[in-house]
Image 1 (cartoon, rainbow, N blue to C red):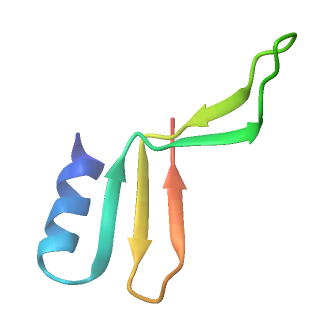
Image 2 (tube, rainbow, N blue to C red):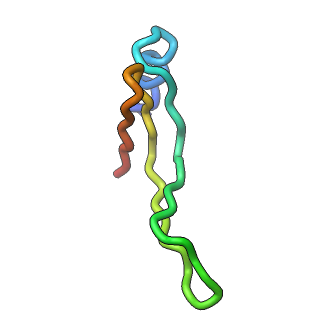
Length: 57
């Protein structure tokens, strides 16, 4: 909850471009025989310089 509040403050103050809650990343597509390999992080922070940070616990 603390990181969410920090990200919200940074977003509204203009220090970060955007933040997304629980984004899902697909590392390998699934098929009829295998499940897809995915990862869900807690946060994705998009910085003003167009870099990003994915944070998960």
